Length: 266
Length: 160
Image 1 (cartoon, rainbow over the protein chains, first blue to last red):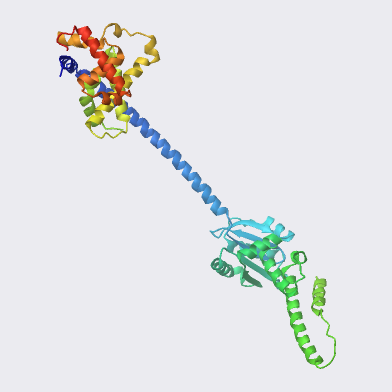
Image 2 (image 1 turned 90 degrees about the vertical axis):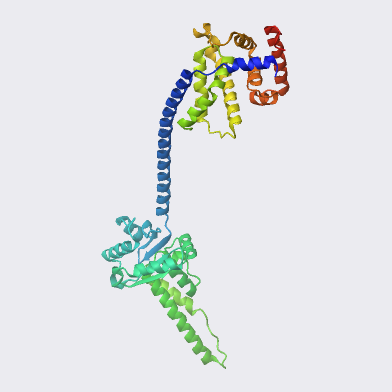
């Protein structure tokens, strides 16, 4: 090591931080640490509060959305045709009248957020009051859930209603595809099921023809066509038997004539 | 944030080093106090994990040098002269050492850091270059020139 090196080292070595400076620095830094610590903790609390509010808001929005989404539907058809949207908590979250009577009836009732079983009770009671159920009119209740299990559960829930006991009520279910088709056709689930039944017996039946008919008339029509079809089959069998071996001309189209007869009645 | 014990340990361990760097750069005691607080507060708030003592010491040196340079460059300082500046900070030294120290402090600023880091802290040119963010060859040049200037100032005898 050269003299220059050694001398510089010794000269700098003599310089030391004063104890007073060290103590002053320690105190000043610790004081600032405490201030920053308080500020930091305050900031943490504020952030936590903001985050909590945000999560609460998100959960509320999510919960409300989940609550308001109907996952199944119950259609009640007499003359008024109404359909109730049911959420996953079995509450009525939407209601729709599929004809004028249905709309009028729903405007007089407040079924929203009721348990669907209670809503059915209220609806049936209202039908009774408005004299829609005179002469033991048929009530058709159709459910459409996410799956077969839900449908069974809902039908079981509906049939346990006390209002069902004294009335001519039929319950059925349909799958989501049928429900979608019903809504596209502008029919309630119950009427659409009846329409499908009718269409099997007479392919010429249109939605417009049955849209405003009460359920008991549609049922009567179905029964007549069913009986007519059975009658024709029996008659055809008899004709076949009678004509066998003879040159007789068999006429077709008796069924259509019966359909028109049926239609003219209403 | 670091603990009180860590701060106390760091002040005890690096106060002398920081004091010397402050003396190389600054002319008054009040600025030295400011730099001490700035450096140790930065240490408190820093989340850096030091690999070893050398790493920690190098960090303190770099931070102190930068803090001194920032202070010297500050808008306020560049346009004002403090009262204390008229009364330079005094350090009691033996006359021989006082002469050497005055010679070092009379060097242009760019030479002072490298002289201190090389002759006192015994860092190599490569280490100094890395620490100050300078080219190694530049550090060699600065060391060579500062040696020549010091010899010239100190008369050459006994300082070969």
